[in-house]
Length: 186
View 1 (cartoon, rainbow, N blue to C red):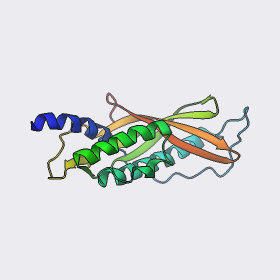
View 2 (cartoon, one colour; view 1 turned 120 degrees about the vertical axis):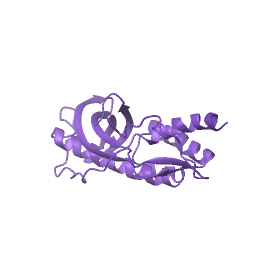
View 3 (cartoon, rainbow, N blue to C red; view 1 turned 45 degrees about the vertical axis):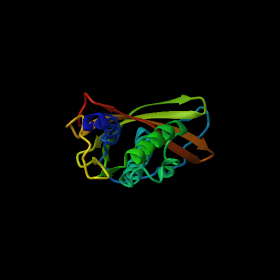
View 4 (cartoon, rainbow, N blue to C red; view 1 turned 60 degrees about the horizontal axis):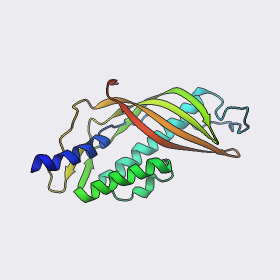
């Protein structure tokens, strides 16, 4: 019975245990990116990485807060993630609440690197990689029982997809996906 109960929570824990280590706060671009069709939204790859890293850090900080509270206040992620990502975050939060799970420790992200950027309709898609560290993260039931990790490796490279939209000189950067590459530790 305990093993059957652990299987659904292991899936939840896996999503949790793809962690990040916070990198130093990224500087925001000092020049306004151009939003014309023939000009890139970021002047340099470094600007794109800085914008991506800022959102990634916000995402993991907020995710830590939400799941350390047992999946409460999930709406804090709405300004950081896309609508599609928000749906999966809500499902995970609901699962935490239903199973009375609480995260301890923090996911951390570091070493964000540029991969590619392209336009898709009115959105610029920015893809980066970052190292996510879940070494200190655990998920526990309300009675203190620990959810067993599927993998002992605490650090994986993640491919992170962000959507960037411009409204005049204002940019909105939102995390859409953060997929662990389990064959690549960092």
